[in-house]
Image 1: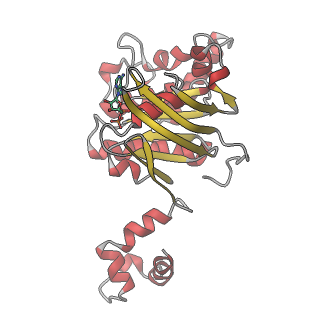
Image 2: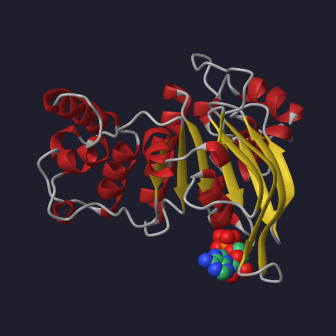
Length: 278
Ligand code: ADP
């Protein structure tokens, strides 16, 4: 959570005793009583083994499907009372999928404008907004490129820009780096972390990838449709500090080793104090 972002008392996502059964009542209980509250501006990773219910939960939060029982509130609105879910979804929720789903015949700018089709903004303003978003994801020079002229990471950046087009209250991502190599995964996760820190964007990311979950400030583990654990890190740095503490360098700092990189001169003692606290 950045200092600049607004933190209201009302959570932006709330679920109460969410149950989803596929098929009849003896069918698969994909979600089995999920009660959850996510404050505005939080970056949450949802992890858990295959079949745990992660995608099902994301579908419920994204108003892509209705629960069998229980309630979902997004941005103060109970989804059970929303008549036109499509409209609500396109105005309130941004999605990023593993497959970027860009339209191959449209340029990067045109793809970003797609979700704004129903917006009353004039065409000129839509184009301006698309340009701003492209700049935000670091691709201002690629506006006229078709998807097949861009790398996998660039295409995913365009998809992220597109997901922000209607200024959503929350951003949901399902394995957003599933198709990308480790370096590109880092780049995309840094971009998402920046959107969270600088824009106060609420991010909920389903992932198998520890590298991705490692960036989040809260990690929710699902198993058999239930929340198995829910761990929040009190500061965005806490997890990095814990990782550092368990690394070779961290152990050397704590042990007071004389064999530390010279660049760390002066920083060693403050770091040692921080490592002692986590
Ligand atoms: P995860 O994303 O953690 O892998 P899912 O949410 O996809 O888990 O699935 C949870 C359970 O619900 C699994 O047992 C899965 O087989 C079942 N399931 C998911 N979608 C459907 C569906 N459309 N119809 C029937 N069963 C489904």
